[in-house]
Length: 309
Ligand code: NCD
Picture 1 (cartoon, rainbow, N blue to C red):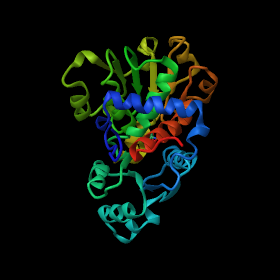
Picture 2 (cartoon, helix red, strand yellow; picture 1 turned 120 degrees about the vertical axis):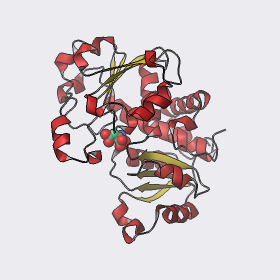
Picture 3 (spheres, helix red, strand yellow; picture 1 turned 90 degrees about the vertical axis):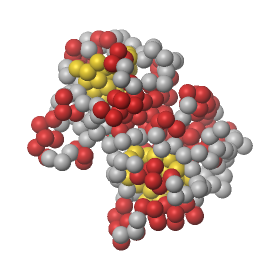
Picture 4 (tube, rainbow, N blue to C red; picture 1 turned 60 degrees about the horizontal axis):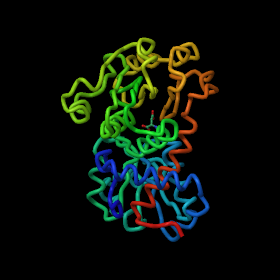
């Protein structure tokens, strides 16, 4: 039963609950009109203390398409945080106005804290370099659409695996499904943090390998998950400049890949996928954008415990 719960980390959802959400999202894709009044009279609060295009707008579009309403802010500087209000007080206040909250914040652990101070369901829309569980629901729905399974896949994650919260969340979730293997492709300095490895792989090094060159492994992949180097989380501009173009996916590299490999990217893209790749039918990152809205529609419905009407 998902009603009334929070989604803070990918571990808040069991495999059964993930499928429950995926199945509802698929039904919404098939007959969206049937869901257009599901959230009548409900309000979603979108509290974004960090920039966002897709996540915030897809949450808002999701709620509007379900017949609900939205309130919120798109930057901390336009909220009372700029006057020195604590996150806890902001959450207590907004929780008094709305039925469900989606929050993005630059501090790791902020959603966990916020969830303790409101009775309404709280969804983590990204907490610093930590987790981004609704991007993962987006990713899973896109994978299911293309591969018809979440098991037995070879998943290459490429780019900034250190600060990339979408990567941390996706690994944790895909580990729940049988026989998935992970190829972690990054410069050494941007490798996956030990805490993610420890939790996701539980010391079992057979499930993953770490490499530096995309060309060496691209032919083995069922899914290539490209990511942006997370400029805003670097302490030092020189390091960012040195590492930012570590990987650029080009049509030439795509020639080495399987005919049915899919390319995902949470977006925004900076340089890491050349625009010529967009017309390759294996490029699914704009479909992924659309899946994000449907996955969030399903999540909002389940956390509010509403049905189509
Ligand atoms: C990602 C994020 O915010 O972590 N974007 C998103 O939500 N689609 C990835 C990124 O910013 O690189």
